[in-house]
Length: 325
Image (tube, rainbow, N blue to C red):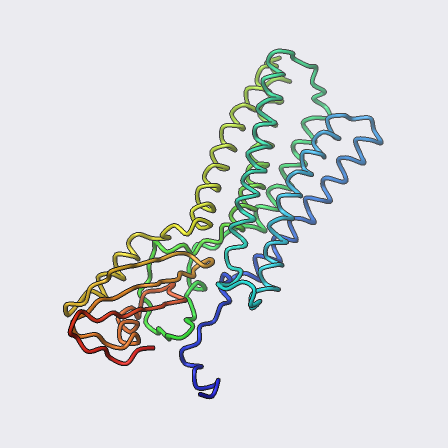
């Protein structure tokens, strides 16, 4: 058999998000912006003897590391998208980066929480003239970064180009995992920093105006709770993809309903996410009147996001098997 004769049944394995290149560029812009702010704070604090400025600069460094992880994940996934060593592509590399980023965010939050508790027990003098401008400058950088990482709420670009089976109808599945978790993780990092800056400005202003020194560590603890919550949410969403959890239970039910007609039954079904907006399906069908796998694939046309579909057909005892693929 000539190799070209199997082309219609060949699957593609590049399962990157529809906006992968755009998100990669935006992430690196935010890395550069955050790194520049970090250097300004560390160098400026060292020159002018401001320990608060130096401390905030090193705090920014942790976010630079987390954002750089997201950037390198996009770079690696793009460069190795068609690398044969990755049997199902590199689409989930972003989930791995998001999982690591979520852990870093959680550690940052715990560090802030610890420092807040220490400040409650051992209050320190606050240099308001330095601290408030620093927090305001940090907020400006965070808002600019959040704008660069703003998410698109439409899914027009998330329609999937299928490998061996070309589905042209567009039955939108709102529950499908179109969201790029890596991009979301980068956004959560800058959003967490923005929330911290807003809280710091509010707390410092109240402490400056009314002498309420306890507001600074109190806002720190509140920020810790918010950041830990976001961290756990990212860990759950990224972890579920890494563990091949079903991305959308309704999608799995729709697949089963569409195949189980005319007496056909699904004996085994696996649905998992390959990348943003890309799902794989492996199904075993048992039938008294078995058809070719292509016939069962046609039943799934219109389900957005099915990028890698494999059908195994089994004939019941005494039934004749149709042509298989």
